[in-house]
Structure formats: structure tokens, C-alpha cells
Image (tube, rainbow, N blue to C red; front, side, top):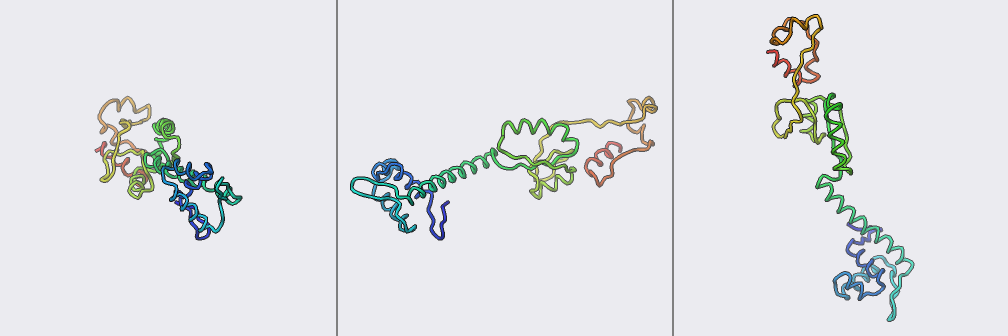
Length: 219
């Protein structure tokens, strides 16, 4: 990682060298601070000045002082080192799941429960992760996971597609809703008691997996 000015590149390592010298205003103390010998440090600073074509330090037998260009350069070096540290920290946080984006797809009912509570807890544990939500049907969510358009999905599905991992959040029962006038005749008897009744149900194209689960129950 470096700072580019034209074709001149100052590396983070060199920026740290210059910061130490500029803050100590003494090559010996700066070398001790950097845990290195003085000659390589002096050569590194001279190499930076040579590449930039400017004097950054005024040297004498009695003292070392920053030039006006050196003062400006010092500020930029501090920014460069801070940016490098921030980049390293961000990479570590992203690798550990503490920073970044999380794309979640969910069926409509999940937005009422259990998704709100899950997201509340997640936000407490991972405050720097930005969550993006999308309302999707089960079959669309599964394909989006394979295509890496989603990172996770909350769906209604009995089987686990090959290549994916599943964690069951809850298990729900199907309930047959009938008019009150028929409730007594249906009662707790088998589902076949309602076989001849007109059904109101979603088209298979809307949610094939959910549709097929109900059909399987009827069969």
C-alpha cells in the first residue's frame, strides 16, 4: 500500500520511517524507536527526498528540522499510516464477520416472526455489519444462494438442497381453516373429510415447495 504522486510511490514502511524522524528530530532516537540501525534509516529518508525531488529535513551538526515541505509531508504520512492500519483492521473484522454486508432473503411471513428478533440480536453482536433484506419466495431464495446473490435465507422448506447448510428455526403445523358452519362436521377427523370442499390455495408457481408440502399432506 502506498501514496502515489505522479509516478512517485511512498510505501507505508517509509512513511513510518519519516514520521519517527520528524517527531524525534533526531536520527539516532528515531532509529532506536524503529528498532533499526541509523545508517539504513538515513539512507531511506534520503531516498524519499531524491524520489520526491524536495528537501524534507534541514540537517546540521546540531539539529534536524522540518522544512515546510516536510511538515506537509508529515501530515500525509500520518494519514497514510492510519489508513493502512484501518485497512488491516477492516480486513480482519470482515474475515471474522464483524464488518461488511450481509444479504438476507426471506419469505413474507418471516418478516413478522422470527426475523425481527434474529436481526435485533445480530445487530447487538455485529453492529458494523450492514444487513440488506429482500422478500423472496423459497425457490427464488434457494437459487439466489447458489448464485451468491444472497448470503442467507429464511424459507419454508423440508429438504436441504445439495451444497447448502440448513438450521431449523422452528417447526410449524399446517392448519385447515373452514367456515364455522362446517367446523363441526370436519372436527378433528382426517384431512380426507375436506377432500370434496372447494379449496383456496396459492398457485404452485408462487411457491412450489410450500405448495407441494400441502399437496403431500392431502395425499
